[in-house]
Image (cartoon, rainbow, N blue to C red; front, top):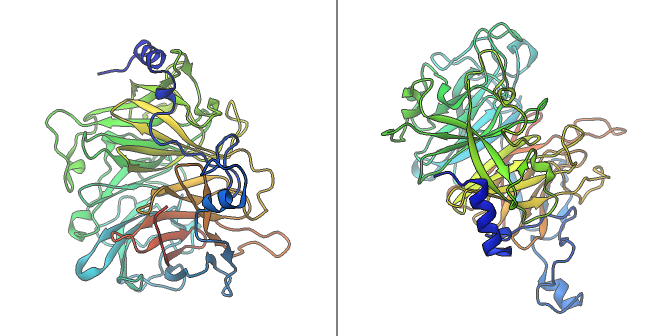
Length: 483
């Protein structure tokens, strides 16, 4: 049933602030431990020492790493799982570079299987360590990207690594499925004949971490559309797939795919779908007064709630026109850099990494929560523009995201300057978890690659994350505790 603008406005007027603040509202300020303006002290006692102590979250300050790789709080440690140019696949070739989206699956005898995307765009000649063209696992032999499957022991020790899919392009965030597979997403719209490609790209592919035979003869899931895919999540109850698009000119869209009648999800079943199966739709938002919202950057207050409708995509394969350009003004809501997603708390956490001149209002990061039952989108996290990204302690540019088993969110930073993994809890406080100390620039002009692929092991004891460039997968362990 569609939630009309009139229905949403009527519901908002009836329930008042209860709609605006539905669910747990999180606020992300620009500095660790900061609270949003106007938030009360934890115990209502003002700014006294006891109140400040009660507000502390996280694990304390980050300590520099003598090895120059990863700063962590006291009591935490890390292990390098894979490193491009150092670790090798079963074939003897180097681990591919530019690690991106990652998911963890429970393996045999206490091991963990990590499916790791490699965001490599364009022809293979442009990269020193592309994903190897493993026999039977290649979609387009001209393309450099794909994903690997990494097997690790209980405490993150590297056991083995092999190719899951090859010959794809710009494999970005992706997402796991409830039935134990990985959906790898191509963040590109290159067609055959462009950038050296021999096939059309911009699709989603399913990869099985357990059954290598199931990955042979890769076939794109064209029912999910062809555009600059970023991330995908599955609603385990309703069967919908939600997808983000990282694009500009115009800004990208948030999509929902509804399965066709009678379709049942399961391992490999997405590959059996007809190209036009189900319904692919883009979202349209409106405020409590029923007014259309053209861009998510318009929201400048945490707790803002929009009603959501869905508009059919005219040509999901974008044969002549990019999907996001097929809609006229006033038909859909847009957002700059729609990035990582994660299913949790009965809905979808969605990241808009930043907004600049291509957006109505500038910001340095938003995290939204889409509630499919209520058909509402709530702003949970908002970062103001970081005016000093080279200063440690400020966060900007959220990208990959996960829901922590210890409460709140863990976010991988892809901003300017210093790069962090950081946590955010529901009452508005944030805290650092790690800082990238690997300078890939120069002493005069330091540069630090983004974090990607943040995900916990199935038992919650290990946090896996990647430094994208040159390509390092890390296993972080320590005294995790509930926030």
